[in-house]
Length: 174
Image 1 (cartoon, rainbow, N blue to C red):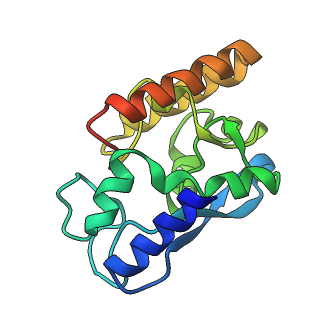
Image 2 (image 1 turned 180 degrees about the horizontal axis):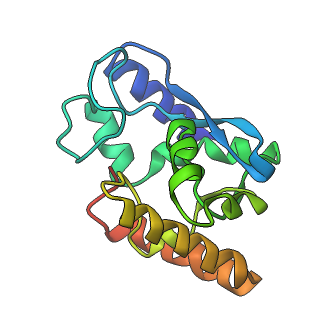
């Protein structure tokens, strides 16, 4: 909690706007919930909906740091406490991406038979960030389905451990 308070203060001091970013996402059984993240972008800046790289001009100075270490995801533990998410599971996609993928990606809706997660099999296998092609989305869904069909406590522990390692080693998320 002290870290989250410090991050919220840093975000507020770095740029105007709320410290938290709240966005509707689709979760278990297709139910929509409000995903909470730390805001890493300037407010009211026009541009593409998804961030394509870490040099995106919409990202704030503090935003670059919290994205690099994935600290922008910390408030999602509130979603976990509310029962809307799990620590591990398929990442919930923004609602427009979810709607488009339901119609075009095989077995997409099967992702909604489990709670979405803060991290998942797809993310630790490099399938995160912007989706540029239909094949990338198909691969992400295949990773999610692999996780769903092979779920175990041990697999969850492996994903958590690999997520922590990637947080410390990777070039960052975008």
